[in-house]
Length: 222
Length: 246
Image (cartoon, rainbow over all chains, first blue to last red; front, side):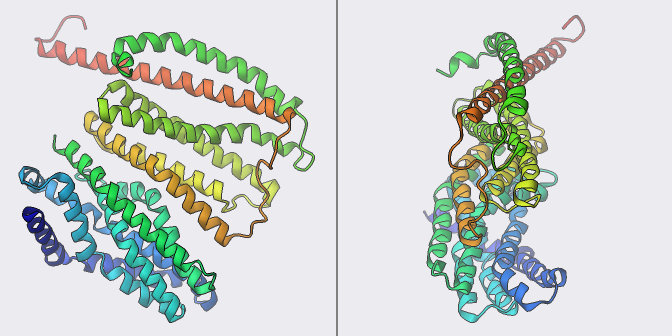
């Protein structure tokens, strides 16, 4: 337990301090959200209707930005082997990595999502629901990115692979997060259900993804 | 029970016998099913002759899903018992499933033009099929990106199992998305019931597709297994001082 905590704190420290941490994915998300209106046009009605989906999609893309580095760097410089020799299991390592990724890198996603939703013309309450959905989705996003990152670690063109692997697996999160925002906006009474489904997906990912990541890392190290 | 097929030589012998059975079976079933489905079966009272697309579309859709289940099962067997034949089966199944998914999307789009008036409708089933196609692409891309065969096999197996677990959730989420945000007036592709005059050719076409798929899988697995043993023998020959006949 002690070792796991040290590992988690080290990963968190690295995520925050080394290489910009949250800044990269956050900037990516901001840039994506800034470019969409330039593509679809300034019509406020269209932008408002598209806002939940666009915000959820931007958050999903941003979550994949750091996925390549989550295990790739450690594999390249041998840190991963040392971790494997430590008393922490690979499953624990996967959990620590994904947790540090969620807390150190993805935390701005709900904030940016909230601000962007307002800028796209959503009312404050709906934007709040969308931000809450993003917050519930952050663990799922981090674990999905980690799973794809563990499978693609150290491969050339890992970034492209991660996007291709994670995109279909993360479809439910995209649906539930965008669905929560849209339901709140249209007042269909299903915002709560969407929020719960987003949280449920994150919990299911929490229960299963660390084992998948550990299996992928084990295959890589053997 | 899997171990009986884990021996490459025994599997190759079995496959060599199975390929002609399934291959000829597919040929005969297509010879019966294709004319029946495309010429002799009655046109639909609503859809006219376009209903004949169903005889390709529906079997392809069934098989693309069944093949993914097979891919997941083979991956599971490989991951637990490390039987190489199971991995070769997974490797052979993936492109076949992807082609069936692609065929489903293409025929669905061609069918959608006369029925819905658009080439593409964001219908729950077409969208799920598109995601399934992406899952196949991801699996094949991951495998082809890893040079080490053993690592590619294990990474692929992990991804295929994750995809299989996630597939019902994806299916649910797409249905959820679709029922919430689409008017429910889209014409159902296959209608509530299907008449016997259409069911028989459909069943024969489904069997023909299945036989063809089985023959292709056996053929590919056997080829890959032979190639693998050949390479192993060449390497051994080189280690033993090279030269001489392989």
